[in-house]
Each structure stands twice: as structure tokens, then as C-alpha cells.
Image (cartoon, rainbow, N blue to C red):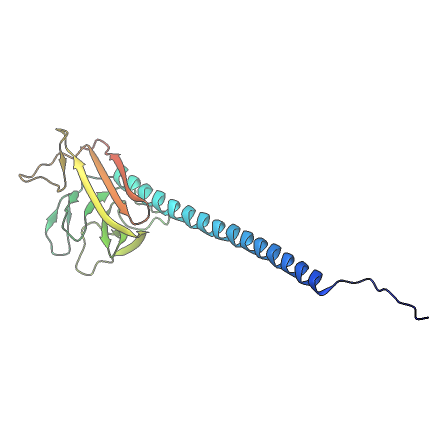
Amino acid sequence: MKRICKTNGFTLIELLVAMTIFSIISLMALQGMLSVFNTGEQTDGESKRLQAVQMTFLNLQRDLNFISTREIRDEYGDAQPALKLTEGGIYQLELSRDGYRNPAQLPRSSLQRIAYRLTENTLDRVQWPVVDRAPDSQTIKRSLLEDVEELTIRVLDENNEWHHDWPLPGGNRIFPRAVEVTLALKDWGRLSRLFMLPEVE
């Protein structure tokens, strides 16, 4: 009489079912990990964007807080006002400011000339180490914020009227009361910030 030996094992169908379940679980785990990584990258990108926007407004606030009444001579020898706002100019905002730190005690003034401009969707801060500049004066440019579609600046005068150009016709020497800066960003839309100017003589 022949003895029938039984061996414990998996059938082909059982192996296929197990492999299918394992593949599904692995795919779900992979998708979960990718989702976590993508969320982390997006959060990191948004955080860096927020930091850049905050630093841009902080630079504006510092420059406007130290605004000076010092008029200057540009590279052509022409007199320029201490605060200049030109809607269609190369520099939308140009101003003289004090508080130029000098930790090395170099023989220079604490005044400097600052300007803001929008070029190719990038907001730049431009500065000149000297107030009255020559044609070959050094220009220091720093890009503050990218993906800026529009830069709008206006000032509030002593009569609570808004202007997109300054000084006003007629040579008004009185400083405006406030400056409003509006940035139109590709990703965040329009952001506005109002800066109150200090009282200067």
C-alpha cells in the first residue's frame, strides 16, 4: 500500500493573494511618505517666503525710521530732494537716511542714500555709501523679494491727501506724514504696509 505524504505549504493562489496585499500596503505606505515629504517641502517654502516678505518690510521700516532732510547731488550734479517718489522713474522711492553704522570708525558720514526699485519682478534695495555721488560712485544692490508683479508707493501729506509723486509741484519742503507700500505678489496677492514717518525739521 502506498503512503500519501502531505506537505504543508502555500498554493499558487495564496501566494498571489499575499503578494497583491503586500503590494497594496507598500504602495499606500509610499504614498503616505511622499505626502509627508511634499508637505514638508511646501511648508519650508512658505516659511522662507514669509521670512523674505517680513525682511522686506523691515528694511523699509528701518530706512523710513531714519529718514533725513539732507538733500543730495546726483551723479550729474543735479540737486535731488531728501525724499523722492516717482511713479514712473527708475527708482520708485529714493531717500536720505541717517544711522549708517560705522563699527570700524572709518572716515565717513553716518548718512547714506537709499532707493527701491522693481526690475523683472524682483524688488531691489539700492544704496550709495556717499550721499553726494559722482558718476563713478559705487552702487550696492541687494535683491529683497522675488515674484513681485507690481510695486505701488504713495505718501500722505499734512492735509491727509495721498500722492504718488513727491515732492509736490511748487517745492513743498514739508515731509509727508506717512508712506504706504503695496506689493502685488504672484502667489500671495496684494500686501500693504503703512509706515508713519518721524517728525523731522
